[in-house]
Image 1 (cartoon, rainbow, N blue to C red):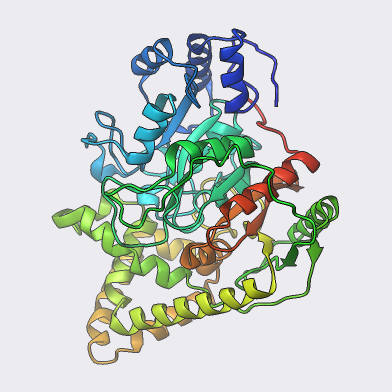
Image 2: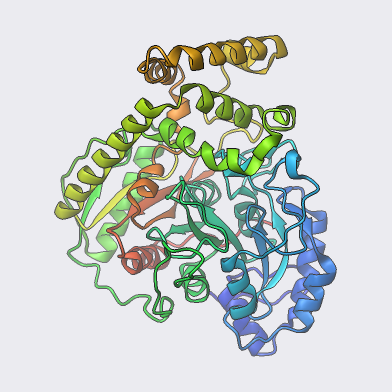
Length: 507
């Protein structure tokens, strides 16, 4: 984990090794911050939406390097909140809004951890998409290949860490938003058991799937972040207590003999050519190196992506308030469509269908984890797709024209309004329309379909770098039982030691 100190470029190693270099007098927080700001200023990744250089340099000058992340430059996902910084939710609707409070997890990283906050990293609008393009901030690019996506919603954080700009960024995962960009950029991305890190100071009850975390270059950075940020907070009644020994406990599990099920297309998501073979080879190498046992198992899971998306729109409606629908032109087309689709099709019958599917997922995964200790799966259906796309498969010319042409969109709005009225007379109409739509456009449920199951179930899961397909990274997803977060981290640690990955790809 050691890295050579080159003071005109940001640190090449992980955050923990940077703190070690500070303490050994090999590098100063001021030198690191100046190098970081210079690199951000010349980067073509477009991964920061806001940089507070003066505050960042002041924090570096005042850094206490005895703290866990003392003086480490850290990015903050722009869906988090920092008092006095822009609070845009990555949307033109709130482009002038300024934050009035700081998220609990960010405050802990800054005050308890000692990190020097640099600025805000780009996210998808309201965190609603697994892509990295917004009307407010434009397109964020993948450091492995410019013009490729970094996924979302924590895309800017992934690009900043993998791109060599900073060693650590905050992130959150409500449907895969840590693991998806980690998979696309060759990073370790961990989502803990639901409630592991508090979501305060204002935590909606929905979507009841979101877990806060980070994007980092190493497993020990992720564990140290848990030491700093995890733990109960009274503003989030779903948050969990923490012993605060995540880093100290790394490597404490004996992995030999653990039963592993390799289920690459979890949730019946279609994988792109080459992905399953690459993941199978990586999984078999990891199993052989650790003494784990691959066992035969299967599980059939309903895809909840569409119902999950529509049910969560209630919090977005709450945030937009009386601005909706007049603000529709300021929203990305996908977010506007999601709002209109949800208002038109999401009724009590569909809510019941969603809850029935959720119960099915819980029961079937519960039975699966009685038979196995860990599940290995793909993180994403394929490697990174073009950055401007809003879906992972190539755009369909007819669908693309219909969804972007103003006249066609007006017709769609009218049709959805009619469907909303029709639902009053035929309660099953919305469900039938949705089923027909997803059969014709399966990518609507493929994106995030591999990751959402762990958000719905609430168990810990991580994306581990598993090599490349076509020169771009793919991730091996590791799922564990509830509250066995430390075991999932140790699997990541074993992979890091036996099958190491590059900490970054460029500056």
